[in-house]
Image 1: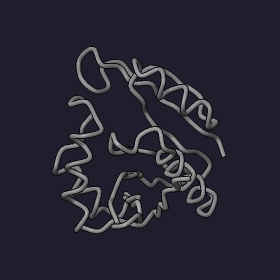
Image 2 (image 1 turned 180 degrees about the vertical axis):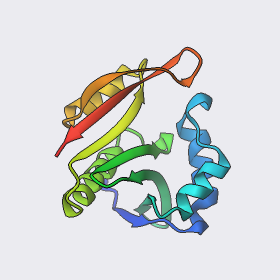
Image 3 (image 1 turned 180 degrees about the horizontal axis):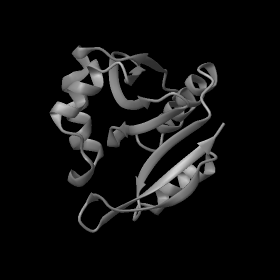
Image 4 (image 1 turned 90 degrees about the vertical axis):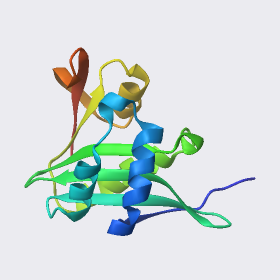
Length: 153
């Protein structure tokens, strides 16, 4: 039985090259964060970036979680997983980590946006307790709508 050993850790500026690689590998162009936005995420007091590493024979970063921190809400800005690790529970671990942070910080909600045409992803979030709150017209770019989703804690 092959079991991966994942750990989630707070990011550092040293993770910036991995985050750039992850954006290109995991997201369509209209949904990618800019290099400036990623750098800001790593240094902002109002954001938190977590990296998930596979601690196999060698430690390899395989995904990331970017959160915006508000008074009563955590907003998942981004969950990205390298394609080779998708479907292996990495995203679910990042959601669990977000839930743990939200409970520890006594937040009331977790918010996120997902691409309206990515029904599989929307269903994945619904399965984890999120509800669709509405459509965000032209959210990613012209004609690329998002859906706003919320998990009430």
